[in-house]
Amino acid sequence: MRILVWNIQFFTLKRIQNATGDSFFFQVLNQAIAQANRDHIVSTVTLADPDVVVIVEPRCEQPANVAEVGELASGSGPDGLIYLYQLLHAINPNWYLVPPLKTVSKDILSQATYTEAVGFFYRGDRFDFTGPWVWPANHVATGPSVVPGVNVVAANYPVLWANLLPANTQFASQARFYDANQQEVLFTTANDRRPVLTTFCQHGVLNPITYKVFACHTTPTKYPKAASCRALGLAEALPGDREVSAVVGDFNVDIRDGKNAAFINEADLLYDFDGVFRSTDGPTTTKMVSQAEPSGYLKSASYDNIFVRYGTNTVVPAHNKAVVNRVAGSLRFPADMANALANYPLHSGALLLQRFRTYYNYGHIGNFPGTSDHLAIVADI
Image 1 (cartoon, rainbow, N blue to C red):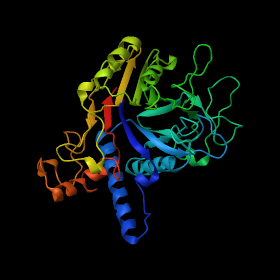
Image 2: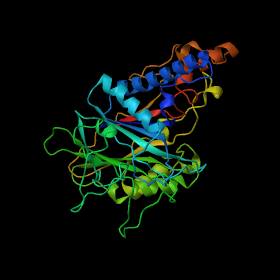
Image 3: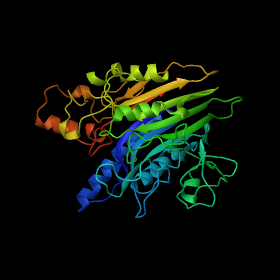
């Protein structure tokens, strides 16, 4: 499986479709910025040619009543995921979108009516979405998803989401986890984001391999290292026969920081994971547009990682990994800028610096008004 993971900070529909503005000038400007952002995202996915795309940090609303973790997400973040699905589906009709679930019941920081979800896109001609949970019948339209069982009746999703999946799909992701005593595992408090587990099975293959993909986005202010280790240590993350487990996302643990440098090695020792991305792979975060220069647009931090564990009767592939830097470009991912980085001198004047930061150049790659302060990561697992 080739997987692309991307924290698109505060992802909403406005990031890729925005005609708002107090005047005609700003309406046109916002449309141009949104178009540059969405072209950057879609072209990156197209060039990577992944089987699964994981979008971390879509924002979503919380209704007046208290929403449960594992319910269907709603609001501008899910609206943005649907629009991105439409863009990808227009390029290749085999793209599908797993209905996104809430990963936390309220805003961690401001306590406002905002929560968060994860977007899982997948190629249905290569993999089948298999759960691991199901969508329940005789329940409110928003769920939450439930563990399958003898007394559980599965059902199709509401029409909005059912149309983004193969017909009669009743599988669902899992956003709640429990220990051997049936106590819920928290990461690390009830108000912190949970991982989301989505399983995929090789399509059209005799005795297929199942991939268990956990999307993880720990709360940066609440012991992210401990939360990451809890995610890596979940019972579900232990692969069985012909299974591969991958815990991916933004762990908010900077492995380039000396005090956290041993984190991946610790994870390997504790949970027998292969850390596909290590501190030597380079930073995965970028500077704000207003702070970036041609000679310095990357932060030193690396929060985004892919941890993989292989079960019996599986083959460990060449990981063919990459941190996707569309500023400098690489063999697989050319620079996505109107002017190549080499055209900018290391010590540019104010005008050249302004040109570098315009949304046709770095401005649509870095965060605000661009795409994200995180770079995408991709690997074969």
